[in-house]
Length: 277
Length: 277
DNA sequence: TCCATCGGTCGGCATTGTCGAACACCTACC
DNA sequence: GGTAGGTGTTCGACAATGCCGACCGATGGA
Image (cartoon, rainbow over all chains, first blue to last red; front, side):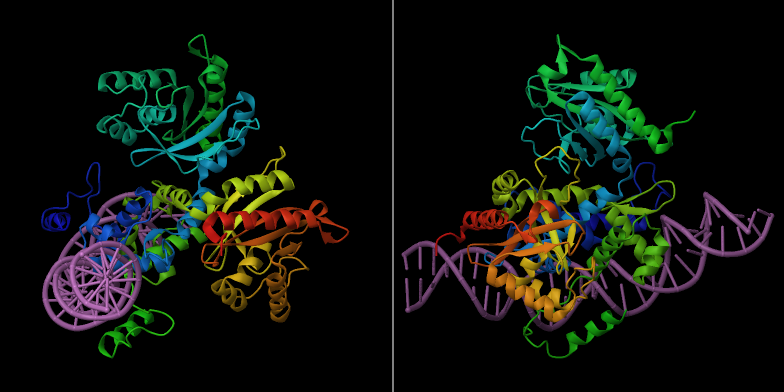
């Protein structure tokens, strides 16, 4: 309701050419609503009914139904025949996997992350900045026979994880996002204060890597380093994650692990074309 | 173009109430076009330009740009800053993973497929019917240390794989889909003729399982069995896949593997509520 | 330097999506 | 058994919305 009326005004005034930060051109309403529905279905744990969806988004039932019907036909949502409730559809999985296949950073990193997992003995994560957090695009299991769950497609917070700190330190958009958001305390070691957090980012830039010692999960520590493309722009981060007893020694991160992570990040960056000069 | 004009007539004449087989209600145009764009981007291997996309879908450049701009803001497509080309976006990966988390069949099957992989010594696949093929929603690696790639989110053909035959035999929609499509020959053992294929489906229903001995990939054989829900409707299929030398013996599938797969399928079905009757 | 093509934007028209009410259907509860 | 409240779905009319095609500015070969 309100968002619609507001958007109207933008057509009258000057369009400010390009906008420093955001384009702010008008977008297609039905698409925005459809995306909001998918996000709503992704957020709510269980299936949602039509009335819930319509009222949550402030839409008429008929409107919401039209969008859902189209999304269902395209395979983006499915409807449970019994209750008539809606949930996400299989086409999203297919397209999401295709995204991974095309992802250049991931493709270049595959072999290097395998090496890193073998040499470090810990699980390896590759993440990119997305929306308000870090999206895991690759995950190599720790090379032992323990039961592990694949975390590709999962999100991690920016302010407490090693991957998130690296991206916040090097990616300007991630930086402002991390500063604006409220930094939730996951453990008693999580850094939430603005000044402390910015100091950590400065430290990250100075060192060239970031750490997370029990700031997100108790007993778990990580190290991460940034990956740059051929234009020296930050495009992602690699890191290892493991039990704090293995990753740390005498209260400090084991130096050989830091070196291994940084070597891997440099290798991937070089593979992306950032190598020479 | 043509589809649009046709749709117009339905508003004038009688609306035929409900339509016998399909609802045939009108869908939202911009959403259909956006979905077609995503599918186009998923199909083409490399990134596509705006003009390519517009001409491929028969749209004006401005129209295509508006849809792409919105999709980009929502995270469904990304634009390479240098060339301006478009590719699929990270939000699809996030939503696709969320689809897996909510998937009830997959959740119930997790523990049973692990057992099956351990007892059979082969890799395990869990698939559901989707569009024109089988979508892999779970994949357990063969329990040795060999290098394997995760195939969750990949598609398999209906007519040549064990999973596809099971779904074609038990799911009516998959059945008609498999009969109508042209069955491509992947190896010289692929069954393409309509009569032969229908005979195989009859055999599958009679036996309660299906096989694929070098009909899709040379040197690879699979066995699969159907999973039913509490209404005895087929909802998916589990199967094992491995080198033909291990899976077969004296030209026949090893009986203990067939039994293990069928036990797993029955266990998951029972877990879904199909147990008592 | 020119020319072809790229992605992106803008104004005007009318198609298209939206709204709200009415419709079947089901379940639970008097 | 009826009723009341819930569901998802359809319909018709209005006008706001998204579509089209012409128009920019930049880019990159020839």
